[in-house]
Length: 84
Image 1 (cartoon, rainbow, N blue to C red):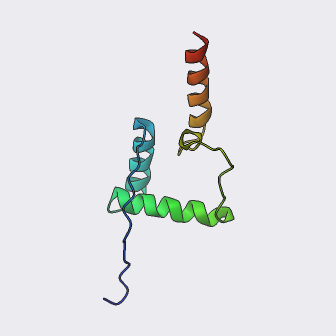
Image 2: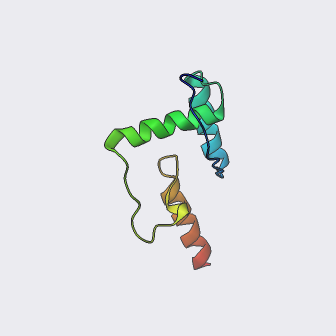
């Protein structure tokens, strides 16, 4: 098929309720046909800003979030739980 894009790799991710709300808000605001299309657009925009940035050695999955402030919020919750 001319112009078709092959999508050969499936990727599963887990989102917090807040991330899912943010994704859906983006999707509907930009009239995207699906969550997958919205995620691809967000990735395209993010990767295009400054190029692809490699993660630092030892970085954990929980160090990366979609919404601003979420990473710091997780760290604070972890600290308060560990302090008890």
